[in-house]
Every structure is written in structure tokens, then in C-alpha cells.
Amino acid sequence: MSYQIPCSPVVAETEEKKSRFICWLGPVTDKAAFLRELEIIRARYPDASHHCTALVVGNPANPEIMQADDDGEPGGSAGRPMLELLLKQEIGNVGVIVTRYFGGTKLGVGGLMRAYRGAVGAALQAAELKRHVALLDLRIACDFAGESRLRFLVAQLGGTCGNAGYGTRVELDVVLPEDRWPSLQAQLQAEGFELLAEPGSHPSKT
Image (cartoon, rainbow, N blue to C red; front, side, top):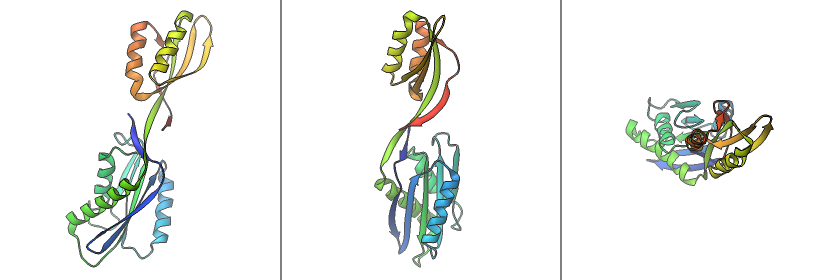
């Protein structure tokens, strides 16, 4: 499955009843790096009331890491709405930190949920997003006469062919976008090509 990821960090500021919400949103693939960014922001805004966070590492449909923190706001009023918006927009490898300066007027749980969600929404509008495509590693065998046909099928589906081993037959390394695998699998079965191993993950591209 493909999903969106941010290209670079952005900062957006919103206001709700004189409370300021400053949202940092950026690409994150490592929890430790995200926590370092949080410490930087805490040092930048030491007098802020809260620094609420949400983090999605990996595919938002099945994240490797998914977490949210309210940082002292009422439970479920900050981190969770931020996280839910990221998942709804199908954005992965992303972290958000929303810094709040209290403006003197309590917003209530509902008001806080709207304000924190709105802060992340403003950052998403400012962010440049790109499509992230997971890749699969395959090794496929065919006879010599079928090699050109196999290479054609792979290229037609947006894949690339790598190393080839030549013995009694051809064994070809293939890298394929994950969402194209069902189509290639059907072609392999229909034309008698042999898959030598189950598809494995590959460093992704964008």
C-alpha cells in the first residue's frame, strides 16, 4: 500500500480564544529522533503550557509505531485527535508536536480537541507531501526463451530487474512496487514462471 509522507518539517500557528497553538510537523522514521526534536521544542518554548505529540512510523494502515501524548491536557483532548487526523489522511513516517500557550480561557475537552486537530490541519496544509511506495524483493525463474517476456512483464508493472543467474535456467532478481504484486503474481501463474521465494520487503522509495 502506498501512503503519504511529509517532505520536510513545517511550523504553523493557530489561535483559539487567545490560546496560541504552534504545530511542528515533520518526517520521522525513528522514535529517538522524534524525542530529540521534542526536547529542542521544549527548550525553544520553555514557558509554554503544554507540548502535545502524535507519532506514526511506517504505514498508517498498520504502523510500526503509533502513539499520542496529551502532556497534561485532559485525557484524549489533544494527542488522540492529532493522531486520528494523521491516520485519516493516510500519512505515515510523520511526527507532530503542538505547543500551547494558554490564553486565559478554558476551552473544554471538545474545544481542545478541535483546537489541536485544527493546529495539525493547518500544518498539513502548509506541508509538502509525497507518495511513499513500498517495494518487494522477488526472485523468479524461467527458461531462457521466457526471459525477455518476464523482463517485459516486470517493466510494464513499474518494476526493475537486477542480477540474473544463468544455469540450467534463468533466475532473475526483481524489485516491484508492493501494490503491483497481485498483477504480476497472476501473470507468473498464467505463463508458468516460478517464484523462488516469498516476496520480501525492500528499502522503500518515494
